[in-house]
Length: 235
Image (spheres, one colour):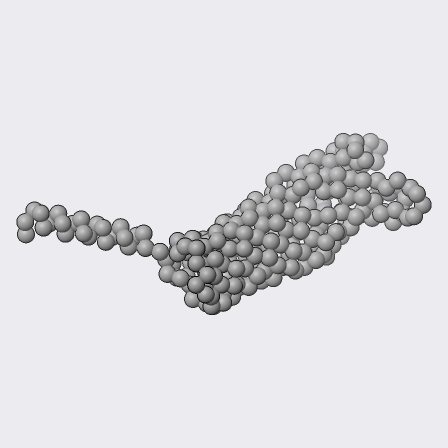
């Protein structure tokens, strides 16, 4: 073999290996898959307003801010056969998020706060994968509804009153979520993905020992933003 032929063969082999490395991962067939994910949870300021009797009394109001927290979850889903443009997936998801209290106010006055807020939710999500965009990555969007347990374990201190709680028993509320992200297929069975999520529930009620009038319950809210990453394994 001449030197020229040897170099040509070596280059051809290297080019073939490079092409194989750059080749897109095969498309997944329809069927069952499992997923797992985790990431950052950001909870906006939470305002809780006392529910008072119709006596004209001015309700007490708490405003609480939170440190960044965490999100963990997983699910089991089914991917339907798609078209040249995309396909639908349905996924039953169980997820938990928690954020620690940073600081708070009572009727606009700074109060020493500690504790956290958390929510465990079961949500049925519907996703649409834009498989026609690229074989190397697939954008997707999704939305869903479900049920959630919402809990406030926040405590605060007032002069002469000791430590008081703002929360009470876990509230069961309707939850909803929207998401958008990008999937990177690794092989026929395995995906990696990153996404952003907005999660919220119907308004929970908190209780506290500090009551000005009425029932002693506070109408509150629960909503979080998430940035997460995870995997899917297709059977």
